[in-house]
Image 1 (cartoon, rainbow, N blue to C red):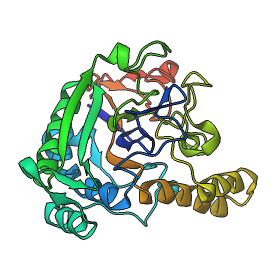
Image 2: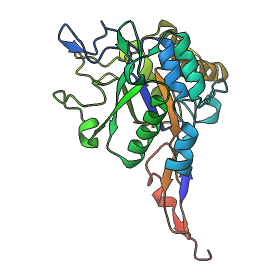
Image 3: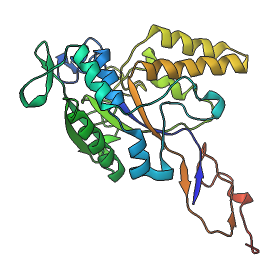
Image 4: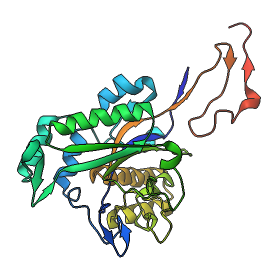
Length: 289
């Protein structure tokens, strides 16, 4: 088995808008705010309730490496400033301090709003197992999670009439792998630009699915576009990673390398940034192996 590092990342997105209320006829409108995920304490608690190490060890193995970063490769773009922790006790403490009190059934509530979330993803065995891991931890912190699984062809559809696409994101949380097709992360990090927000006006084709908007992020990304010094440019893109991860609009789960099986006698050349057969003409059979 060949395992080649690339930039793909399995991650959980947190909706910054309200997917359950229509504003001017649009769900998850930019004119709305999520009723509970708008609280930084709730987002921080959820980050602590994702057991990345168990997901790696018991679900993905070598094909999914636990990470705190949205950008994981190439190495000089990988942030040294982030870390991850699975800590149910600390998540409970954070929610207690923020005033989220356990009520009926042990579910926390504040100002009449309960911590109940719909967590959606595509139908895929590792994803359903990861959902279960997250749900179990959330239950121990007083958060109720309803799991939703959508057929992949529906979830990843671009059909504007389909209510269950990941770009509409009509749920509280969702999880999938986003692919990084080139070793420079600038285009990949456009996923958090304010101008890229997915809305009804652009038929939900904008790349910013969480609908998070940050002037600091926008300015940092724009500065990287005109920075000619490669070291300074890398630092700006690392800061973009840190801003998105630090705001907990995404929770990175596992980095997903390219996985390919081949004969032991085949000498191939694989890349985490291209399709498997990009350099097929240079493959050869080692008869001595």
